[in-house]
Length: 495
Image 1 (cartoon, one colour):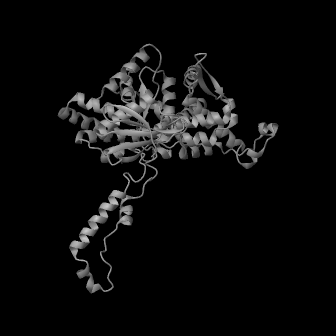
Image 2: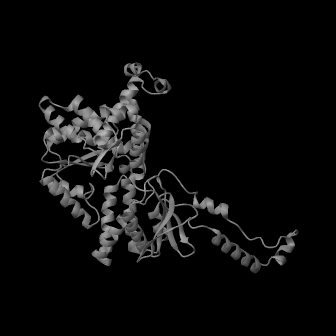
Image 3: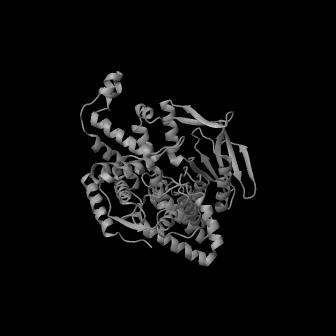
């Protein structure tokens, strides 16, 4: 069970929180709880939540975390939940310098959760909501059976990325009430010049039959859905022939997917912001002389990079620091962009000292895609040794493909857009008038992985109960992949 803070840890919390407020961080009430290593692994297996619906994957993730911790391969230093109040967990066995580092890091996350625009519409009482989801799933387990529920959760989780991550912030389709009013057409019957003749020329039965005919024609002429639907799970919840328990569980999976979406959209920024502040607070305020070596060791471990892998902590903190330095020295704007004298650029310093204000602004208004797109510069890419890499079949090894800035930036943005997942829309739910569901892949130069596509179609078909297909491009030509419940087929097609 979680333990309350000891008097010493409570003093440290007050100290670190004071530093965070003094630097201008604005956060929810912060609650720290102390856990043993085993307890922390259990909570981490649940995604940071103390209570969730029962499922075998939590046990699998716990086993992986426990073994990794036991063999010394990894250690969980911080676990924080976007909630109001914000909950975070401290490892009981940590040294005092680690507890201070984690606290400072957590206050950075807390500030980011509260102020970044992508988190604006998230449920700030998700700890309670997760517990509620667990109760609802357990109720269905009692009614339907544990195996049936777990199999269905497996299926639903395999589709959890088929949401519209921007849906909380924009409306892709018109307001249905306004659209209904605009499209409301009434049968007028035979036109007459004199009002007293209208009942004789257009009896009620005749007008009703004309209206019925008009409605049928309108329904037949409509495409369903009228516009591509990015939120595939929402479309299934509204139109698939689901049983009550299936509908509720799919709804739970979709709700949780939307809760976690902002964290996936801001992984680099969020970890970079938290790392920036734990570094700033520790090195300027909280460190004692005898703690410097331990702090440097643990901080450098967090910032370490592995060949071919992007470390979001490292990328985020370095880019925030780069922005701060550029805005302190005035290295932005038209004059800076047009300067091509390298000696002048190296010595450039307008002494604006606007860096701290700028990074707070960036923290509020950007996500990872816009953050990288706006602030990643050729100079930063060279300094951080960024490159793309490919697998060389002949040499059977990975190798650097290019260090060219535009290609590196494009590859990085491509990996971040839509969580690095393919963009899929529902385009037709009555293909060739057979009730088949057709989706379309917005091809961005990367082909669908065939095995994943097949499994996704198989699971979608299990929900739709009719054949399901997806149209994509292979070698520049449109291809329809289709699953009818038993067999998988492919054919060239034009939508």
